Image 1: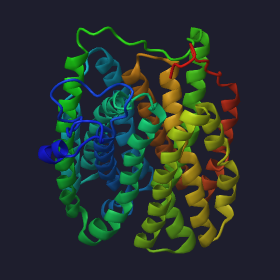
Image 2 (image 1 turned 45 degrees about the horizontal axis):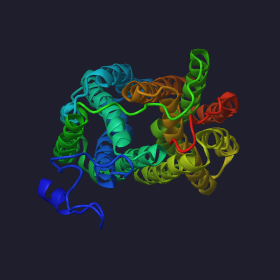
Image 3 (image 1 turned 180 degrees about the horizontal axis):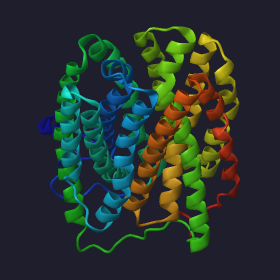
Length: 422
C-alpha cells in the first residue's frame, strides 16, 4: 500500500513522491493535494459503506428480531446520537491537541461494531453494535474533514465535496452489497465486511503519517492568517450558525425518511421485493453522491449562500410531489431530490468554517454531529409516526421540510478582507 502511494508522482512539475509519504517539507499551500484528498475520500467511502449496511439490512433485522418501526428508529437513533454527541467534543479537543492517528483508532471501533452486528443475538446487542459504529464515526469525521481542508490548497469547497462524495458513494453501495451478499447470506455474512474496515485502517494509518509530518513541518513557523473574510460580530455569527443548523435539521430529517424507510415505503405501496426496493434506495443514494460533487466547487465559484438557497428550498417542489407519484415517477423524483439536496452540506460546512476561522475541528464536529443527531432523532420520531399512522403519512408530512430553506435569505454576505485573499 505504502509503496504504491510512493510510486505515483503528484504532477510533472513535482518530484515523484506522494503527499502521504514525503518525509520533508509539506505540500505548498497553493497546491491541492489530490492524492491525499483521494485517500481520505476513499476512507470515507469505506467508513460510510460499512455504516450504510446497518440501514440497508433493516428489513432483515426487522424480520429476524420481530422489530417494530419504533425499534428500527431506535437503532438509527443509537447510532446517530452516539456519533452526534461525541463529534463536537472530538473536534474541540483536536483543535487544541491534533491526533493524526486517531482516524485509524476510530475505524477500529467501527470494525468491532461490525463484527458484533454479525453475531448479535438480541435487540440490546444490536443497539450496542450500533453505538460502536457511531463512536467510530464520531472520531473519523472531524479529523478527516480537517485533513481535507489541510490538503485543499485553498479550494475548500472542492476539497469538502471530494471528501463528502466518498462517503455518499459508500452509503450508496451499502444497499447494493446488502442485497447481493447479506440478504441471501443472512446476518452472519455481515462479518465479511470486516475486510473493508481493515483496508480503511491501513489507509488511515498512511494518512496519519502525512498528517503528523504536516504538524512537524509547521512547528516553529509563523501561523498563517486564519480568516479570509471580514470577521462578523459575535451576534451575527451566532444567528448565522443557528440558521445553518436549522437548514441541517431540514435536510437530515428529510433524508432520514428516505434512508431509513424508503424500502418499507416501496414494499408497502408498490409491493416490491426487498432486493428491488434496495435497488431504488441505491439509485437515490447514488444521486446523493453525484449531487455532492457539484455543491462545493460551485460554491467556490458563485458563493456558498446561493448553493445553500437552491439546494434546500429548490428541492421542495419535488418532495411535495413524491407521495402522490406512481412507481416510475417515484424513482425519478427520488433521484432528483438526491441530486439537489446533496449539494447543500459541503456549502453549509465551509460557510460555517469561514464564519469561525481557526476552529475547523469544532465546526466540523458540530455540523457532522448535528447532522447525524438530526438523522437519528428524525428516524426515531418518524418510525413512531409510521407506527401510529402509516408510512405514506410520514412522506406527506416530510414533504414540507425543505420549505425551511427560506431561512437562507437571512444568511450574511461574507466580505473578503482584502483583494487577492482566498
